[in-house]
Length: 144
Image 1 (tube, rainbow, N blue to C red):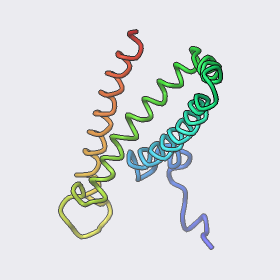
Image 2 (cartoon, one colour):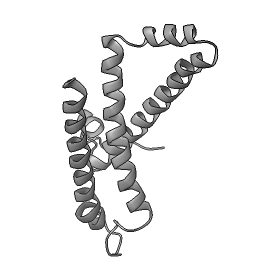
Image 3 (cartoon, one colour):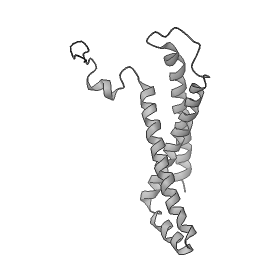
Image 4 (cartoon, helix red, strand yellow):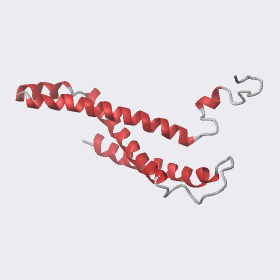
């Protein structure tokens, strides 16, 4: 049993909100999972809406009229942002998992320098690329 006196919570609430010693990678992990679930929900909704075409042209027209308002335009935009982040972060995770972006092997002593020196710049670069894609998509989507 852990005793609170032997393991004090030095970071307090900031340890949870700020990620503590995990930093950016912890947030990217959580955001990757959330965007994946959001994209899955969109995909399932997309299947339901487009399956109306199999029934009749009137069912298709009715389904499309229900999802054509400004609320759904904002939803499509959020799906696009989720896709930008999820795709670029997935490429980053693939590079890390395949060993291309983990750095030279060193003795595993905290703080893990390969994580901080190699993976963190890659994570920030992935965020920058996703941001650039999001800006390009935003300009394209809202300039109509």
